[in-house]
Amino acid sequence: MKRRLFAITGGVMLMAACSASPADYRKETEKYLESDSLADEAGYRFSEAVCEQPSSENEGTQFSCSAVDNDGDEWEFIVEITGDREITVVDGKVTG
Image (cartoon, rainbow, N blue to C red; front, side):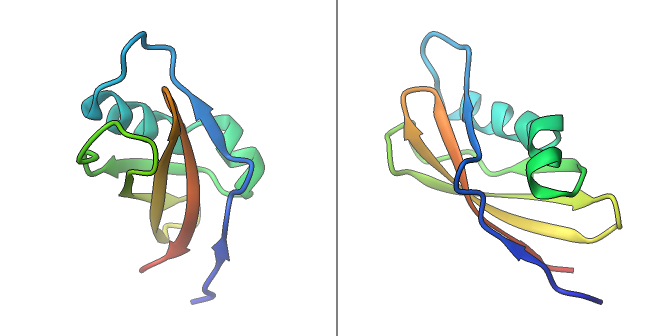
């Protein structure tokens, strides 16, 4: 199996909610990982995205997510809250 690694430096997602809770960040990040915009940037289509709920909604809080790409490989992502209603995927790698 070929191992792939990428960092999405421009992969910023803005949430539409007025006041974002940790549960909002989890839910919206799962949607983002399965989005067309991430697929275009990463070169992979992801499905079955599952994220842990962040410990807070504070900027700098990181949390992990997993998803499966269109080749059937499982990925682990590190996501950081980078602003009010804003996240950035800071790392992604194949785990299985």
